[in-house]
Image (tube, rainbow, N blue to C red; front, top):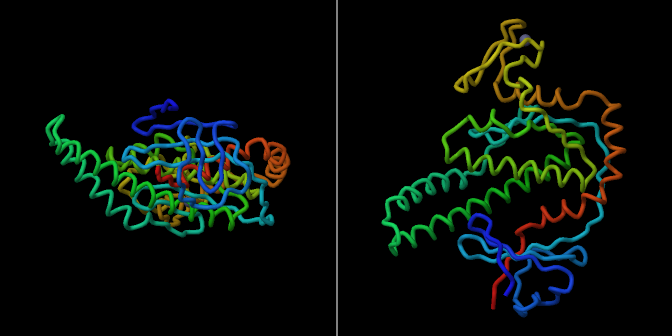
Length: 298
Ligand SMILES: [Zn+2]
């Protein structure tokens, strides 16, 4: 048996070159043939496979495959994105993107289940059952979130040449209660990873703006800086130029401005990037394929 590495409560085992082969079934050394439910066809011969067992006992196979970039036609659209908790993403275009509704509903349910779990006696059967329920709901939430993030990141990559995103750090983490913090943080990180991987794949640019940039304190019209604003303040008026701002849209506009400084820099970055493309690509496609294939051990 391969040794399973424990990563939190998810276990993984990796098989390289002669350790596996792919036919109608997946053959794994020392385990045998396993029936697979494919989520999509493999674009090329995989170089390794990682078997993942999640906390609720589902098995996945994640393949590492090389994939040629499919460069999209260059366009000159640039966008700034402000990530938040009440609204998942606010774009510099003024568009606000909410997280999917089932996600919100399940998050409430998750909080309830976790409360139940914490009240169960240690070592009891009821606790075991409650634990499984929490793990299963976590999975459902993860699936809905991943699906939403894939669709959104693909759409943004197709529509924009340059995407500017604020670095994930304290500013975001301070925003909410512990549970929602942990969960939304996970979504933000995943979202950024997807954007970066797809940018490489399709020839787009993703700029990460330092979290120390005062994006929510500065007026995007005149540049006047007013100092810290409490989170409850969703709208404000600039004391200098008098323009009314929606807090998140103003931040997204500042993030956009902080990213796209000049064409020259962008041009250079694009040239440098095409060289690293092939090198990072296998890694990027791994992330995209990650956990997409469900295995049913037979
Ligand atoms: Zn102003």
